[in-house]
Image 1 (spheres, rainbow, N blue to C red):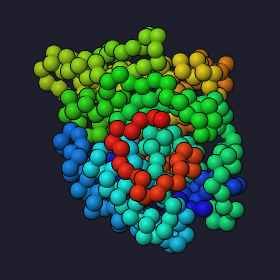
Image 2 (cartoon, rainbow, N blue to C red):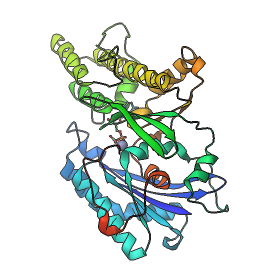
Image 3 (cartoon, rainbow, N blue to C red):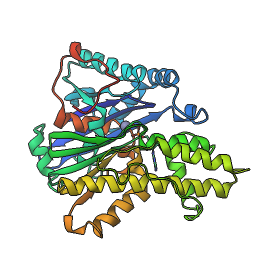
Image 4 (tube, protein in one colour):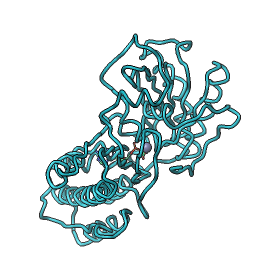
Length: 359
Ligand code: KG4
Ligand code: ZN
């Protein structure tokens, strides 16, 4: 069966088609993403009104393009999955109202999806195999059994511009929130520090590149809550620490920016890896699933791999990271999550919920 996913919770407008079969699980047929990022890059953050206006322009062409790229027709679509929260209200409304309208006009069942769960279920997508034949399936148990390398219990880390959350995944459809950030999200810390360093928004990818040229010994930033009993995170103090460093410096030359980029990334990664592996150990997790824009950071994923293979080798925990385009916001992960976590809901009962959290 084929699912049309739609995602408009932040600045992206995305539509995707996945094919779900008994033998191959979830196969990506198309994943179209249009971003208004360029319009926000010089303002240091997203301007919600501009994001929503762009989404109104792009939503229908993006859906058309996803259907065209998947080489299917509207009649091949079995269900529609839509992000209904959390996110920016204006942006969510564009996607939710479009999905509701299409569900009525095309007479297709509608599945509302929590964006945060989408980041976790991106790990169930097989992005490389393109299938055509196969027996159709929407039975989550069958779909999960294809992805039989994800062993439970698993720990999930959602690490994005808006969220830094640890979840315990006891089974393919049983998730429980265990800890999160007390203030800024990890991606938000990258972006806010980027602004102090005069880098365009979103700063995460730039900081990752600049850090490669940074001197590891030039600056040492604090690791908030690193040795705290809880599994919670805190990143707002890092921004203040970088601000203090920049105030001490006369001119922010390229090398100093690279040095501060290294120190920022090093501190964020240290905290993310330490706390997450503490959770893995505490819950004897057999799999660790990453998701969200910051999981696109190769230095982070390499550090996870390295520590799991050395200090934590005894735990025998396997790491799963979606491909980069499935880490940052996309509609394919929403379509995938609808298979596991969502109920068919009448369009009359679906509404945008900007404050939605883990259930
Ligand atoms: O998941 P996402 O696309 O949107 C949200 O749901 O927030 O994540 C966007 C965040 C931004 O804060 C961006 O700076 C960060 O992910 N990001 C990165 C990298 N790529 C994106 N952070 C660090 N390193 C990266 N390579
Ligand atoms: Zn996201």
